[in-house]
Amino acid sequence: MNKKVFVSGCYDMLHSGHVAFFKQASQYGDLYVGIGSDATIEELKNRKTVYSEKERLYMVKAIRYVKDAYINRGSGMLDFIDTLDAVKPDIFVVNSDGGSELKRELCRSRGIEYVELERVPDSGLEARSTTSLRKGVKSNLPYRVDVAGTWIDQPYVSEHGSGWALTFSIEPNHEFMERGGMATSTRNAARKIWPYELPNYNEEMLARLLFCFENDPENKGHISGAQDAIGICMTGLTRHLYDGHYWPRKIEACHDEEILSWLENHICLVEMFPRAAGCSVVEGKDITPKKVKALTSAADRCWNAIMQKDLEGFASAFRDSFNAQVAMFPAMMQPGVQEHIDKWKGKALAWKMLGAGGGGHLALVVDEMPTEDVIPVKIRRRE
Figure 1 (cartoon, one colour):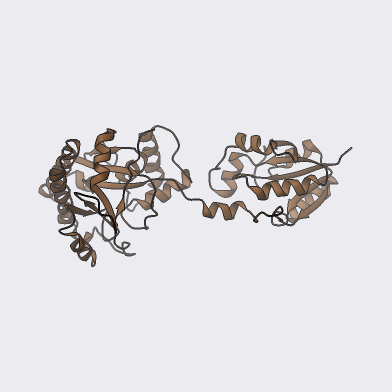
Figure 2: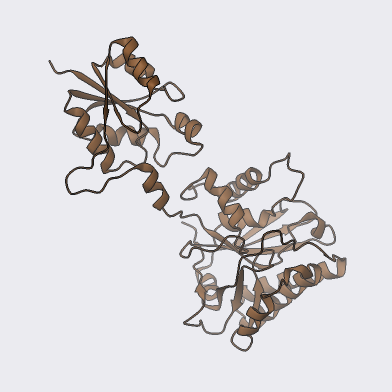
C-alpha cells in the first residue's frame, strides 16, 4: 500500500512550477492536495484570487500526479489542519521557501514525516513562481478620458450651476504615466478590488462601488470626483449631470458604433510630463456662476456636436471647455504646459489637458489622425 503524501498551497495562477512540485512530491506516494480558500487568500495576501476556489480545485484535480484535492476550510497560515487530519498522511511535503518551524512542529506532534524540497523546474523549463508571474501580468483595467465639463463633479463647483461632465473609458493599449490626468489614482484603487479586469456586472454599480471604495468616509481631505470612477467603469461615451452633490443625478451613455468610431478618428492623446509632486492645481481657484456657466455650456455643445458628428462644432466646444477650466483653476497651467500646447497649434483643431491638469497628457481634436507622436484611443464597447 502506497504512503499518503500531503501538500498545501494557494495554487492561484497555476503554472509549471506547481506541476513540477506535484511531480516531485508524488514520488513519495499518493499525493493529496489542500488548496487555500478564496477567503483565506484574501486575508493573507490582501487581494482577490485570479481563479475561484472551485476553478483551482478543478485544475489541481486534473493534474495526473494528484490523487485527490480539497479546499481547506481553516484560516490563516495553517488553514490546512482540518484537511491534514482528514487525509492522515504519512508525509507532509513543502517547498523550501514554504517551510516553517511551525509546520515542522505540527507534523512532529502528529507523527507525520516532514520533507522540504528545493524548487526545481522540470527538464527544459524555466523556474516559475506565482510572485514572479504576477509581477509580469499586465492589468487590463481601462483608463478614463475626460472630454468636457471637468471639475463640475466637485460640489464646490456644481453648487454654482449644474451641468454635465463627458467621459469615455479606453482600452489599456498603452501604459500611461502616473499623475497624468488619466484617473490613474482611481485605477490603482480599482486594482485593489479587481486586480486584472473589471467584472462583467452592472457598469453603474461598479462605478459606485469604486467611488465609495476610493473615498473613505473618514477622510477629511480631497474627495476624488465621481467622473473618474464612471469614466473607468462605464463603456461608450457617457455624460453625467452634477448639481451640488458628489454622485451625479443622472447618467446617459452613447453606444452608437458610428458615433464612437467617428470620435476615435478625431481625438488622440499626447504625453507631456507628470504633474509635479506637491503641485496644487486648486490654489488660486476663482469659481463664479458665470465661469461655471461657461464650463457647462461648453459641455452641452460638445455632446451635441459629437452626436451630430460635427467636427468644427466639437473642436470649438472642446477649446471652450478647456478655457473655462483654466479660468477657474489657473494653476492648471504649470510651467512647461504651454510649450507643449504650442507644438500642436496649427496641427490640431483643439486641445485640453486631461484631468486636473498641471501636466500629464493633452487630448487633441484633429481633422486627420497624425501618424507620429500621438496615442490613438480605443473606446471600450459594451459587450
